[in-house]
Length: 450
Image (cartoon, rainbow, N blue to C red; front, side, top):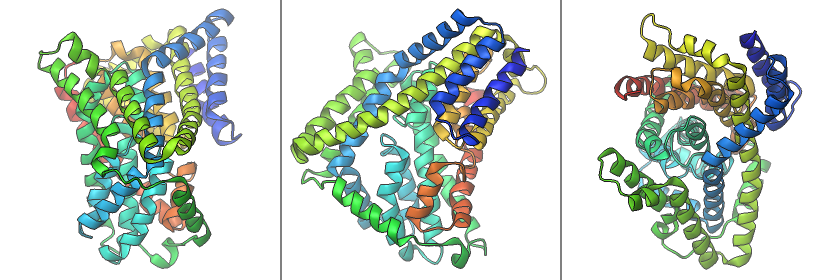
């Protein structure tokens, strides 16, 4: 019965979000309440599981998410990302621009939210498309989609990556070692695959392109009004992202190579590293954009942080209720099936759970958090390294981003594509990226000890 009630709870989340348009936070809490009460956990223990689960995940990732969002908001306000994109356009030739752009989006820019990334990058995609060739626009659009979401799910401090790592209790330094390779490699390979697809008669400009001039003008005006191009050098403006990544990576390498000390562990701690980045971003913003713009950027960041923290926290609540039902034993049997290849089977199951949730819900982050919340209680029973399970969830969570996603429609308008054109680019490239990353993750699972 626990399996049935869990399936009903997940279906309830999906139905509330998709058909009734209920906010994911309310949907996840409702499903958690149903699961606890229907499966016999009891009134008091259900509430306890929800609150404790929320608190535990906030302990793991609350500060990290807050610091990451605020760093992105401050750098957006200084115009650092716009400078970076302009430099890329001037220094890279047309043929290599899609690959350079997708690497940039998946490695340097995951600290900002995906909506902001597409607003910043879409004008570059449109303006540079004619220099790439007749299929320049769909190729650049595909490169944007692959880069944004590979960074979001694989690369620290991408919010989905931080959330999955926190829910599965994976050290961010460990995640960074794998994600910083898998993310950009997957993005580049997916963009290469799309270039081959576009060599055929696949793309039809007359039906696949549909420029929304009003929206593009609004986006352009809004970007100019909100951003301030700083006189500071670009390398200085990017230090709030680069320094924390170096600190986290150094701590991780020190741990792996066994020369870590308490001080190295302190500076390599993700909370400390991102706080250093936040202080740096704040000081740079005050210096380059002024007090008023800095305060506005901080306020926007706090607004975004609240929603993300609530969704992440109640994802942890659902996982805690699942654990309280005793379902972990049943799911552990499923994930530890001894026929064939148990490691590969576990990776495929984790990928499948996240992919199905994404197809149903339409949100990469909610799908990733929900999948991680479902699997976290049984992680100790799976004979696979937690980081590999997390990477499998990340891979599945970006599968086939399509019409039930708000990002899909924003992408469509800003890139000047029709619905069909958006399906041919964003949906196809995220599907390719998900499938391309899956065997890479499986290889990690086979190599890394559980």
